[in-house]
Length: 422
Image (cartoon, rainbow, N blue to C red; front, top):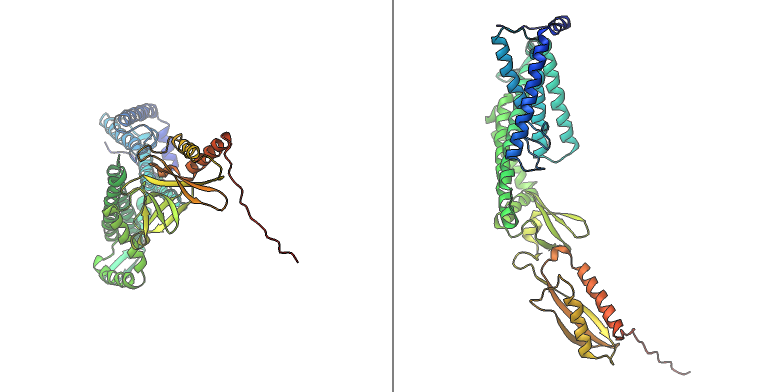
């Protein structure tokens, strides 16, 4: 049974006024309920709670799987109704709408997974939505073949080939689809590689993930250019020009990219390491192809070019041993009990849970100062990522409390002024 095509509004209204539309509406409702139930069951079986994926999303109807299942079930139901000679009207409208919805959800979810939320990405998402809905309206109204034939008439010769507006639009849409599929594959590979990876393993997997994404994007770009109709042999001249540009004008940029892959491959620095670079202390939160993000305990973030991490001196407090040594200096009066002061300083350190017992804290009389006896309390900590100044402050406050409780004097600076008589 051939499906009817309605090219005017009156034809659609007449078709939708038939009694069989109620049957179609009921079948469509069954399709959406079945698609929703299947998506919910599959999400419980394959997706961890709270995880956001391209196929499932954060909610049942948020991902790509729900509109895809709905479209497939609707198409199967449509075939069954046509086989039983049921006149169709609502299904001929539902199929293009669901196809547009599937294209929109696929484009939006892939862009959200591949890139961060930026104004450009939001603009691309809106563009995908407008193009998909416009194509749906033209398809349903029957104007799409007419519009495409008119666009095919607008053509011009470029070298030995003939280009038309229709070919450019079709090539652009094909290129966009190829790039979206490429981004989807690369995002899936990255998600699988980085799943439950920590430390050095995370850095190594991040390197493979970046390399896989770059390779897939390059292949996708070549396929997209070929789909548009661009002769890829002409890119050899462009490739030579790019090589010259990298050799002269983009040396720093190329060096940063190469340094990024070296860092990830050698694992000399890993995500989560506590480092000091150019006087900036913090924890590495991201290692990208061009730069590394270091976040300080105060909340500030420093974007460091990867070349600096290769060519400059970097202190990595987490590479070999996370334990670091700290000290605080205390001055007491000359009449103080030295043994008691030493015990109180050790007590102030050992009362802090973050201070390690092995190696144990130590106290030494370092100098006979101008104002009093100068002691130094040294101790080790194993979690520098949790901060060092906060622990030093707690120990100093406890030292001050203990010295005051035992009436041990902390001398003020003393200066003697000699007055020469006139």
